Image (cartoon, rainbow, N blue to C red; front, side, top):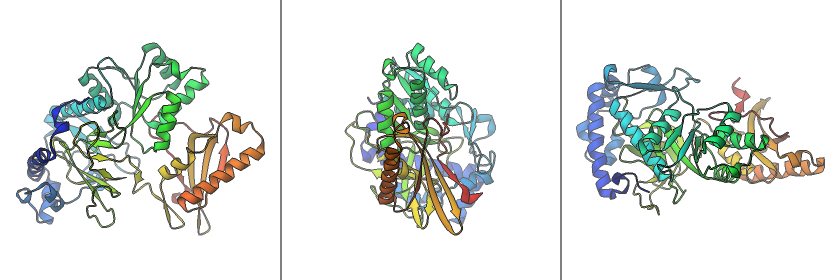
Length: 432
């Protein structure tokens, strides 16, 4: 189902709309944000130089450090009297990045989230179990406003109290689950421990994001929760969730809402654009944001663009699910390894649970990779010979797929820490 007509605009009309909005936002930040005036002047470019959408390449990049250097409100393009809400990142690696919204921004964001939900097959009669965190994190309120905008019933359960969440889903008849993919598996695991038959719930679709997850994890979630699992993408710096989302019809690639966000994919080393189909770093320019517009924001997220038309009829380009981040990449003895690659291998092997931890350490001058993964109750209680066979198979498969050796530690079910929000998969002891 299509939420509004912009989703099916002919590409020619879409490009014209993008150029009009690009010129307007470039002029806006040049006039109102001292940081951008300095950046533009140093690059010897003016908003009037933009004659085509591809001219966005003339503009300088924005990175997260720029946001921290202008903490808290130095990047805002409106006075604080017009800002009706602020969100912020956790600030675990430095000062938090603060983002602002005008009333019009909130309305636009709500509309985009309604678009995402409708595209995911949600309708007015649905009861949405929203287990994304509320507060400064954008996930909870982003989904909440979108659900209300498109007319569904929303349960603002937030994260935590997992056993109670199962009870609420049973009693309230939740039909749509919104949370991180790792928390979805945590909910399934908790239901199983409580003796709750997942198939007795009314859940039929889940919309998961905020962390990279693999196709294998999608299969696992769909099997354990008996639902259709769709991927959604966003980041607080650009707007929050609702930058792109999969459609229920195809479940293949996330439609980028190009009428509001100009997307590029660049080579993170050369900073040059790469064509659709080639892996690179996502870069976004917000075309309609009032309070906190960003120009060519480097996300560090790795993906590919899909230019081919989608069966659903939407004309927006799609992006493949995030395979990892340039700053999440592990270099093990000269080999680039992403957590999503490890997950891909783990979830293909029968007898392993979808709960794991990656530990990287350095012994002397050599890096060592250890993967701790839970096994099923049946395997753990089985004879040691079968455990040993499973361990050796996993070591072989990882060596073949990644090109590095990994120490495998099979652990008892329910021993690896569960997360209510984003899962912390990697412990890198080399940084300690």
